[in-house]
Length: 333
Ligand code: XMP
Image (cartoon, rainbow, N blue to C red; front, side, top):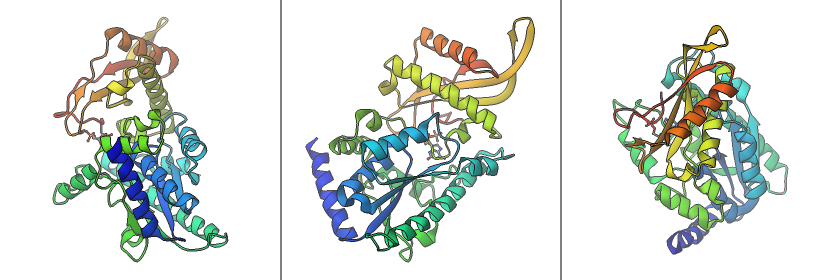
């Protein structure tokens, strides 16, 4: 619309002034709508003086890292570095069952990896014709994130650690380290999508469901192992592919498959077999503070269930979670 295309031009001007002729900006991307729109805006404003970093934390969805690399690097022309740290993340998660602990480990590790990468990029940049320190850090913070992180301060601050906001070490963003740029800070999600369209980002990217930073790790109840990640990932892929095939993706706000590691019994031939339980979840919501389960046609749920049981060894049951929020949350952990 006119408003967001005007916002785009105005914001590009503001970024150019702020960063100057030689300034360089670093930013983390995830493939999600917010970081993609923020990155594309930076690319329009300062070209390859914006350095994007994608960290593979080992708990992303099936083929997601490759897909994001293609979208951002090849299609949107963003200067992108991909760091594969999946083994390090999965090692650190070994034996950890507590959801908040998982979030902290992933958030902390992310900062370590990101800082190390920033140093490498800075060194490389110093030896190029773009010599000059990276002074700025891009964050895709939205208006609701700003509100939420403020209201989360206080005794209940640990309800859920949100690593979109204030997730970086102080030394990086306290004015002595990197200066923060948050171009989406005044926008709501639907405005960010509108801005994405104004920037020419393909509809499929603009309409992507949100995905949590700790990824599949908070969709596996209890301990995360490579085997469980593999199973949860493949079940999720089947579910989302079928949702797309049925033309339902844009009617749903968020959908995923989670894994319950309890062993349920099943029969295979003449034998009793024991396997994991897959929990499907799909919700509609406008603000993610309240949500309703999506009402699938019965045949759709049967099709997805049959595919998961037949195609994924080690799964014995598939359930569909119809709990609304509240009292449930959207994620299982
Ligand atoms: P809940 O489960 O609290 O989720 O109803 C609300 C929204 O927040 C997302 N979510 C997270 N996002 N890190 C994130 O970046 C997290 O730890 C996290 N936990 C939940 C969730 O996917 C939903 O969109």
